[in-house]
Length: 331
Image (cartoon, rainbow, N blue to C red; front, top):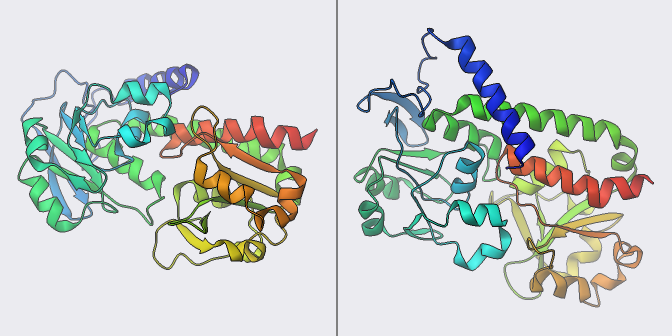
């Protein structure tokens, strides 16, 4: 989290706590997990995807079992003691994010929790999301520690997921401050660059599920939601695709590039934190069929390094979009 935003979050948190001193907390919301007066045996009832769960009000050994959960906790200043193994994807994360999970116990990999390793980590709270944790897995996790499974309107609904994570960890004030800062940045950016945003046709693309495919990041996905719904970067008619499988993206054969990219004037894609475009994406860009597209001929292809999982990384993404795309296009 950038230092200026972190300071802002703590200032807002302190102000909020000052206002509520001596007042009862909202029903169903835990006290902040840094409250030294909280009895370690106290719990509160939280409604989750798989029913009501009794959550410890002062949990300090939190395990994150889903892919995005550690970064959502990071945005709330909550340090997990256990996460899945990210070694395959470390180049997708900043040095700060890598350091954040460096000391966490390894409890499996994406979609495959090592229950024995998780139990050995002795968590007092487990957090994950319903897009990776089914009810049978939830039951097994609950045998180890109280388990909160987050859910939203779609996999990319990081607004809802982080709100629930904040409730579970007693950090709602931090979440609210982060949300407010994000909304202010979003709105001011949309207003300042309204002409650039509205006069262009956009797309956010990546590699597909297999060779010979590309993908479109749909508004139901984390980045697609930010692009289309939050920032108003409208897709063209060829990219108005229904997310029937609720995956947040759709993979299509390269032969459909001309249809999907019809009218696109600005294309967004992804890069590793060092700025290098992944091989799979670069192969799409270099393909003969992609090179026939108007956006390829214009060179208006931008690879952004920020991954969106919460209000803090969403601010990073907007800052990067502004620096690399919106500001140059406005000149």
